[in-house]
Length: 210
Ligand code: HEC
Image 1 (tube, rainbow, N blue to C red):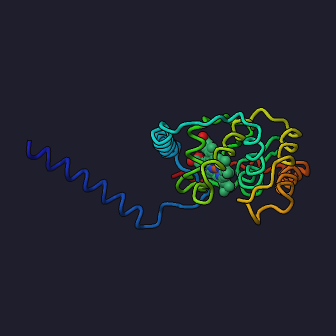
Image 2 (cartoon, rainbow, N blue to C red):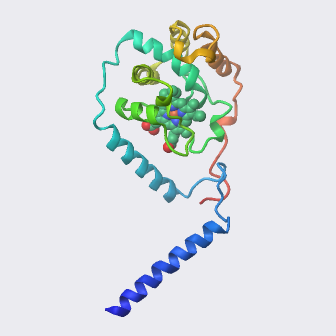
Image 3 (cartoon, helix red, strand yellow):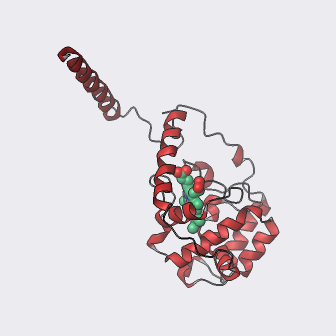
C-alpha cells in the first residue's frame, strides 16, 4: 500500500520535473509559425469552446433583424474586423496568414449570436482576437453581431454596397475618413486587385509541432 503511494508520488514528481526542465531549457518554440500538435490544439479548442459556451449561455439576444442596426454593423465590420476575418470575394489579407490561430473567415462561417457577442466583447486570450467591449458599448457590439450573422449569405457586390451605405459612426473616430466609405472600398479593392493571390495556400502545418 505504502510503497504504491511512494512510487506514484515519485512518478508525478519526475514528470513535473521533466516538464519544468523542458520549459526552462527554452526548447518549446513559441513562434506563431510553429503549429501545436493536433492533440494540443484539440485540447485548447475544447477548453475555449466550453468556456465560451458557459459564459454565453445567459446572454439575451436582441432583435438582430433591424435594418439600421445591420447597416451600422456593416461599417463597423469593414473598419475593425475585415483584415482578420475577410469579406465576400476576399481571398486573404496581409495579416491573416501569419496569425496563429488563424481567424475564421466570417464570410463563410455561420456563428451563434450569443457566442459571437461574448467573443467580440471579451476577445480571446493569446489569439489576437481583441476585446472590443473595452472601447464599445453593448449596442455597438450587437450591431456588429447583427451584421456578422448576415455576412455568410452576401455576394461581394452586396457586401460592398452595404459598407458604402453604412452610417458614419462616431465611435470609430479617426479610423474612417469618409463616413465608412474608405474602409469599405479599401477592403473591396484588396480583393479586386487579387493582391493576396497565393497566400491562402500557405501551409502553416509544415515544420515542427509542439
Ligand atoms: C487582429 C485580428 C483580429 C481582429 C481585428 C478581429 N478578430 Fe475576431 N478572431 C481573431 C482570431 C485569431 C480568432 C480565433 C481565435 C481562436 O481560434 O481561438 C477570432 C475569433 C472570432 C470569433 C469566433 C468565431 C468562432 O469560431 O465562433 C468571432 C465571432 C470574431 N472573432 C469576430 C470578430 C469581429 C466581429 C471583429 C471586429 C469587431 C473581430 N473579430 C476582429 C482575430 C481577430
